[in-house]
Image 1: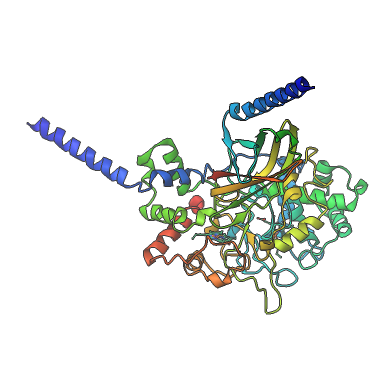
Image 2: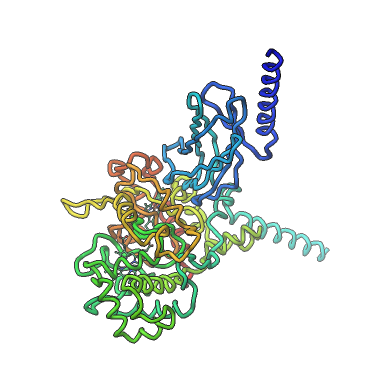
Length: 134
Length: 380
């Protein structure tokens, strides 16, 4: 019984380690700033952002609860003058804590704050990512 | 002795020439980088996948013929070119165009029209052929319905060209005929384009690193460009090669049509869009992939849409006075004066904190104007 538990926890730790590793080993990834406490971290893998044209990005979540994330919502605003996006991006779950976001449009140059809400088993988790469009 | 004097002189002249040349591009590295984002121009032609006759010479010919012909109005009284005058940059010198009645808006220029994502001042359509159908079927403009248009085409001299392109008219549903007509009109309008201007020569020279060639661009226009990119914040909305971000903003132009009616702008545009059977997501699009349909599917109605209008392109704009959605500003000087003294009370949407009265001096206003004119000197 005890061995089973240790085995299980070892397995879990192992799993966790591999997903955490996935976040770090992702080339060109930008870390998401987490605004809610928790063990989940995330990165964004960005394509070049053309001004006023649709673009996409991938989000990858790592950590113990990363694979429990079922749904994410993505929005973006310009903190300087509170302009938001004119389009609602489409999110596709790719599995293993990875999501593809498409149909983002930054229609003005400057700093954009991408806001991400991730919901799974537990409380929703919030992340932000700051990107410059020009 | 003589030789060394000459040598010295040559050196001196060389230095003088160089300093003159370098002094004449006054932009900072950052301003140069921003300037490069307003080109290259013109963009390469890409056929519209939603329009199977886009780019076809026979469709362009038919579309051009119809554009200038009153057959598209039920009583034969008006053609597209009455409001989109080729000698006026395909816009209308009247502040508000006149159909059967005085319309609510100024006719948009049709040059460079293929580059837009949304059509009309309020973006009521997501493609050019759907927008081209609007005046034909509008009772206040050309006043056809699908049946009367089909009959008019059948009786017209265009019937052979039509059938060569689209097949036997009698076998087609009237709505399909209307859409086909609109698609040929779109094919023609896709060819209307402004050419490279002195601004483009300046921009391209800087891209090549040819400062000597870039220095031919007048200093006043360079100073105006600096205001456009910097203090004026103009490039926030008038961005990219066409000087428009293709989206909708409030530029502080009053939206009252008269004392009792307002122009709801993008708000009403989205209502029209969502009610239209002719969007890129619908069955009249010839694109099996529905590649452009993401925009109509994902566009997000916003509280702030009310009274916003599509950001106009600034290319060729010196030819298309008067300005703004209601033609309320008579010339480019009036537009510069408008931004210079913009009435913040009039900004009815929450977020347009980008626009503030610029308080430009006389010389700065004239510089900005000179810069704007360099976006329209392609026709000499």
